[in-house]
Length: 220
Image (cartoon, rainbow, N blue to C red; front, side, top):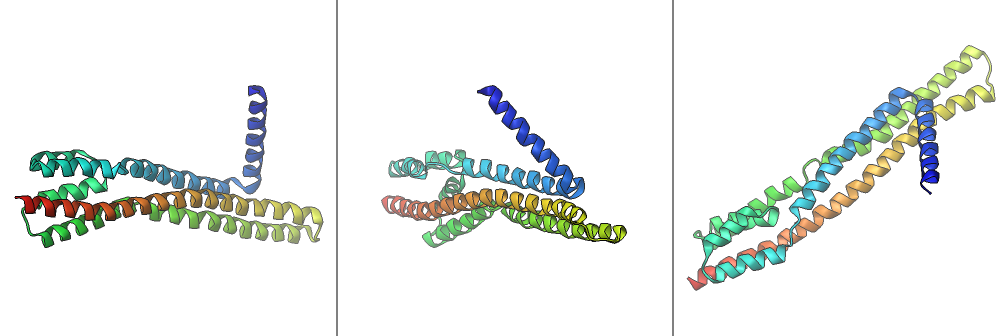
C-alpha cells in the first residue's frame, strides 16, 4: 500500500515538475511565490484566530460570579490573563467600572473596533495574492502567445506543431495562476467566516459584559 502511494506521489510530482518547466520557470516561479506568501499569511491568520477564539460564555460566567461576590480585583485579573477579543473588551470595561455607564459603553465600543481591526489584519494581503496569481498567469499566457507568433514569423509558415506547442506552454501559466487563486480563495473564505463568527460573539458578549457591570454597580 505504501509503495503504491509512493509511486502515485512520484508520478504527480513528476507531472507537476514537467508542467512547471513547460510553463516557463520565470512566470511559474512567480506564481509559486504568490502561493507560498499567500499560504504564509493564511497560516498566520489561522493560528491567530484560533488563539483569539475562547469559550466566551464560560469566561463571562466566571467574571459574573466574581462580580456578584464583589470580588472586582479577581474579575479584572482573570480578564487580563485571558487571551482573545472578548477578554480584552472585558478587561477595558472593568478598568473603567467606576466611570458612568455611558463612558463604559463607549470604551466597550472603541475596544471592540480595535479588536476587529486586529482580527482582519493581513486579510487584505491574501486578497492581493488572490488577484495577483491569475493576473500573472494571464500575463504569462499573453507573452507566450507573442512568442508563438514570433516563432511562426521566423519559420515563415503556420504549422500545427509550432502553434499547438506555443499555445500549450502559454496556457499552462494561466492554469497555474487560476489554481493558486482558487486555493487561496478557499482559505480566505474560511478565514472570513471565522472572523465573522468571532465578531458576532464579541457583539453578543459585549452586551452581557455591560449588563454585568450595571448589576454590579447597583449592588454597591
